[in-house]
Structures are given as structure tokens and as C-alpha cells.
Length: 408
Ligand code: NIG
Ligand code: FE
Image (tube, rainbow, N blue to C red; front, top):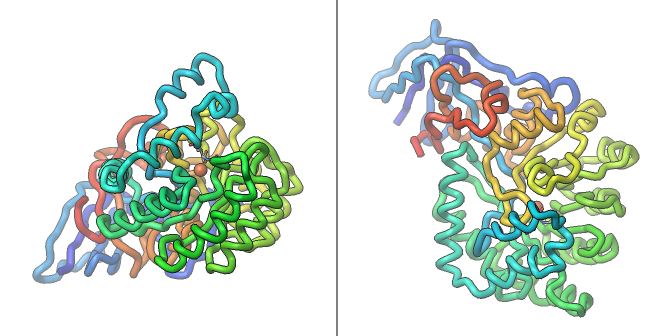
């Protein structure tokens, strides 16, 4: 059945089918229609236009949005949403002065999450992850990527990916699964663990089609560039495109090597030398910045302003995880990008919707108000504007979220 949304104050992010990734000055523009209507059919955006041209059709349901704005839902292209427990005790350690690396050395960090996840049954993990995803959708997320990487044994990594497979079945939004077995080393014997990833995990993941992408935490004290290359090469044999963690604390060559492996995206980029901006500009690899992580860990923000000024197609994501970014709120990500990276609200919005869809190869499905895309959109509260999303930090501007044309 057809549904019409009428009296839309501003219908934002209206784009023609096939519009390219946004880079440079055009990132500052979010096209909109004022005083608009939009029709939805079979879960997809059917058509839209100005109210003066609206012709009601028979047998349709009409929703009068009374002058409120409509935007597409956010696309969160980098999360670690499946985990056993929060790590709020580390929050307190951090306040008292410990940094990310020293907390990890003191028994916290990724290995702490892995231990807890290994002990937690799949059903409980599904239940907890579903509760979080439910909240993330209410906060406006309408497509998401979720990583493994808190398992670090074959059984536990597969368990995490199976949790994601359950979420894919249970939720009506596009979900992409990324295999992050190379998140940390669970043992001193690094070579043996790498072989476990390559010989045990990857074949099993491939035969059960449990992952869409492969990831690796390329960083001093985690995976070296050579180790990342070995992992990505193995991933290639199983058709897994890389989306990798690089340049969070140190620039050790991860970007150049990820580009060589045809990475879809390089994520974090808090430390980004000019030469690497140039490398990215000449590549098809997308730069993904994670301002929630910089804010929470109190580390430098990725140079988002500079990336846009240099013509890069910036993407922003939440990095939602219990250790370095405990928020999935994409409006907060917009605020942080504006306030701390000096992005304009329109640039932040494009980086969390239209461009972000490309970082999950979902550009034909979500990220804008485009005929034929999924009817995943947000109706704002009264008097909210596009600026409100980032300006009113920490304030909920969302009245309703629609997925596939149905209220969530
Ligand atoms: O993206 N940097 C590596 N991985 C996560 C943090 C993981 C954790 O601390 O649990 C991140 O920030
Ligand atoms: Fe991450």
C-alpha cells in the first residue's frame, strides 16, 4: 500500500539516483525541498515533490507531518556493537589519569572484553546486542556495520559473527558484518594466533558466509604492517574486502598498505600526515573518522576539516564499543565533528548519511531521499532544522524513525 507524507517543512538530502560520492566544497551542500510531500510504496521511496503539486491518490494512508523536517536515517559504518559487558570501570580509571594503553596493560582493554565474551552464551549476546541496536535505531541509525574482534578464539569469533547473523535476520535494516579476528593478540605466540585466523577462522567464516569484510587493528603494540598484510592477503583468498583500523595513535604505514589491498575504507586517522592525505586522494579508499573515540579517549581528532579542504570524501562513524567509544548516537557524532573538527553541520550530515552509505557499499539502498531507495527516514520534532542535529548537542531532535516506510 502507498503512504503519503505531507506538509514536510523541509525534506532534506534529496538526491538524484546515481549521484556520486561527495568530496570537497560540495560536501557543504545538503539539497532540500521546502513544503514537500513524499510517497512510500513497498518499503521504498516512490516519489516526492512540492505541496503545491501534490495530488492525493485513492486508498492511501496520509501522514501529516505538520511542518516538521524529514531526513534520511544515519548510516553507521563502523561499530563493535556485539560485546558482553560495558567497561565503565575503565571509565573511572581513565578519569583518574590512566590512558588507553596503560588500562589495556593493567588487564582492561580488548582482552578484558574478549574474556567476558568467551564466557557469555550466544543467546545472551544476541539479547544484549539487540537491545543496543534497538536504541541505536531509535537514535536515528538506519544501516549499520558490526565487527567481531572480542572473541579472539575460533569458537568465540564465530559466535560473535553468528550473533551478527541473528541481528541481520531480526532487524529490518541493512547490516554488514566485518571479521576482526586481528583485533589484538590473545597469546604471546603471535605466529600461532595468525595461523589460527588464517587456517581455522577464515575457512569456517567463508563456508558459512558469516562476514562481508575483513578488518585488522594496525597499530604499535597490536598488528604490524607486515602482520596486517598477511591477514589481508588471507582475507583476499576468501573474497573479503578490507575495512581497517589505522593511524589511531601512530602512522606506521597502514594506509598505504590498505590502499594496496583495495581497502573499502581506512578508519580512525587521528594521526594523519599530509603525505597520507595525498595517498588517500589518489585512491578509491574512503577515509572514516571516529570523533566519538577521540572525545572519549581524549586523544587528537582526525583532521576532518583538512581532509574536506583537500578534496577527500569524508565519512564519519560512531566506533561504538565498550572501551573507546561507548555511544552509538550519530547526532552526537555530528556535534563533535562540528565543534571539534570544524565541520559545517551540512558536511557532518553528508558524512554520516550520503557518503557513509558508500563505506558499506549500500549507496543504492540508503543514505539519501532518492526514488527507489529504502524508505528509512527520520521525522524531526517541531521547529527542528538540519543545524539542530549538531547544534543542540545531547538533545533529542527526533520525533519518529521510519524503516521501510513503517514507524519503528
Ligand atoms: O576502534 N582501536 C581498536 N579497537 C576499538 C577499541 C576496542 C576496545 O578498546 O575495546 C576502536 O577504538
Ligand atoms: Fe573500532
